[in-house]
Image 1 (cartoon, helix red, strand yellow):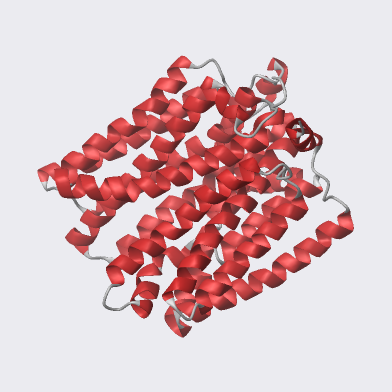
Image 2 (cartoon, helix red, strand yellow):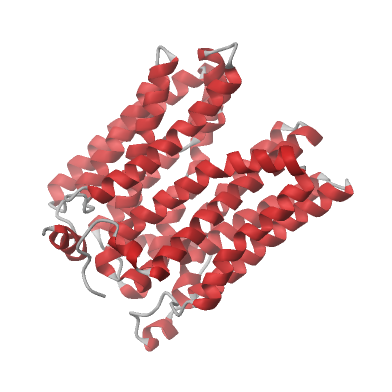
Length: 428
C-alpha cells in the first residue's frame, strides 16, 4: 500500500472507513447493553456484589484470556472471529431481552450473560487490531490505531445517551432487543471484505501457529515480549497505569459529583462522565493532525505521565470546574499514550507472534484494570476515594519516572522504521 501523505488519509480507503464505522457502532451497542442491563439488575436485585461482578466480568476475561484471543487471531481468519464474537454479542442482547420480556430474570441468567459478553470482547478485540495491518499496511498503522480508538470513544460517548433513550422510550426488553441489530454492520463487513488479518504472512508460518491458553501461554508471550525492549516497555507501561489507577475512578464518579454539587449531583455526574470521552475524541483528532505525532516509547511514556498528573489534579480538585477540566485532559492524554503504545507493539511485533503480543498487550491494558478496583476502590472505602486515587496516582508517577529513565538509558526513543515513514510521508 502506498504511503499516506496527509492526515486522515487512511479514511480514504473504503474498507478501513467502513470498518471504523462498524467499530463505532459495536462500541455503542456494547455500552447501550451496559446501560439497560445494569439498570434492570439494579432495579431487580439492588446487589452491590452483582454490580461488582458486572465490572469484573468485563475485564477479567482479558486478564485470563487475552493471549488466547491473540493466538486465535494469529491462527484463524479474523473475519471469522468477528462473526463468532458478533453472534455472541447478539445472543447476549437477545438473551437479556427474553428474560426481561418474560419477567424470569434470575441472578444465574445475569452471571452467564455478563460472562459471555466479556468473552466475546476477548475474541473480537485482538482480531480487530491484527486485521488493521492487512487493511492499511504498516505505514498506516499508527494513524489507523488512533482513528479506531477515537471512533470507539465516539461509540462510548453515544452509547449511554442512546441506551437511556431506548430505556425510556421503548422499555428494557424492546430496547435491548433492537440493540442486537447494531452489531450487524460488523457482520456485514466481515462477510463482504477480503481481509483475513494474514495478508502479509506466508502460509507456512501461519500453519505452524498453535492456539495457546493458560498461565504458561501468558508466560511464553512475556518471554517473547522481553526480547524487544520497546514492546516490553509498552506492555509494562499500560500495565502499570491499569493496575494502579485504570478506570476505577469512573465507578466512583457519583460520589465525586455529590461532593461537588450535592443539589445537582445527577447533572454533575453526567458531565463528569462525558468529559473524559469528549477529551479522548478531541485528543485523537488532534494527534491525527500533528505532523510529529508518530509513536515513540518516550512520547508514550510522557503522555502517560501527563495523564497521571490529570488524575492527581482530579483527586485534589477544589472545585467542580477544575474536576471537569482534569477529566477532559485525562481523556486527551489517555488516548495519546494508549494508542501510541498499541501502535508500537503492532509495528515492532514479529510477524509470527503479532497476535499473541497484541493479546498480551490487551491483557496488560484491560485485564489489569481489575487491580485498580483494589488500589482505588477498596482502598477508597478505608481512607476516602480522593485519597486513594491521589495516592495511587502518586505511586504511578514514581513508577513512570523509573520507566522513563530506563527507556532513556536503553536509547530506544527513536520510532520504528514504519512509524518514521509516517512522519516523512506527512512532509509536503
